[in-house]
Length: 168
Image 1 (cartoon, helix red, strand yellow):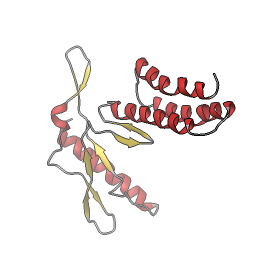
Image 2: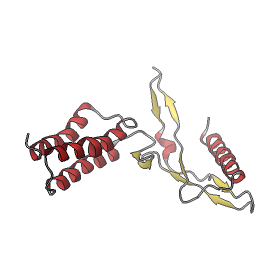
Image 3: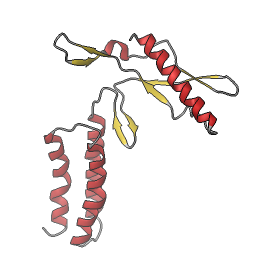
Image 4: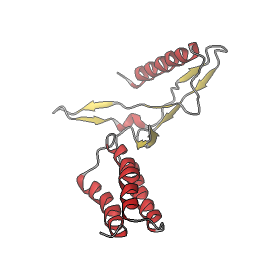
C-alpha cells in the first residue's frame, strides 16, 4: 500500500472507532490520540526493513470527525523514531528500545538510592526488591527486546547494592 492509501485506512479506522465510542457516550480525545505510520519494505532475500523515507511527517492529514458537529480535528502524527509511552512502556514505532532501556537504568538507580537511605532490615529490603523493583522492571521486558548485556547491566545496578544493604 502507498502512504496515501495507508493514511486513508488510518482515517477510516479512527473515525469508525470514534463513532463506536460516540454510540456509548464517549469520543476520542485529540490530546490523547495520535498515530504512527510505518511502511515495511523487503530486501531481495526477504528481510524486512522500515522505509525511513516516509517516516517524516506528510502533508496529508488524518482527521477526527465529531459525529455531532461534523467538525474535523487533526489527529497528531508521531515520527516512527520517537518513543511514546504506551501501556506503561516507552517504545518507538521502529521498535528501538533505547528510551525504555535508559528509563529502566534510571528506575533501578533511583530505587537503590531510595532504599539505601531507608533504615530497612534484611527482609524488608528483599521484599521491596522482589515486589516493587523487579516487578516494575519485568513489566517492560514483555514489550521490548533487551540484549543479555543490557539486562545484566540493570541487574548489576541494583543486585549488589541491595544485597549488601540487606547484610549479604
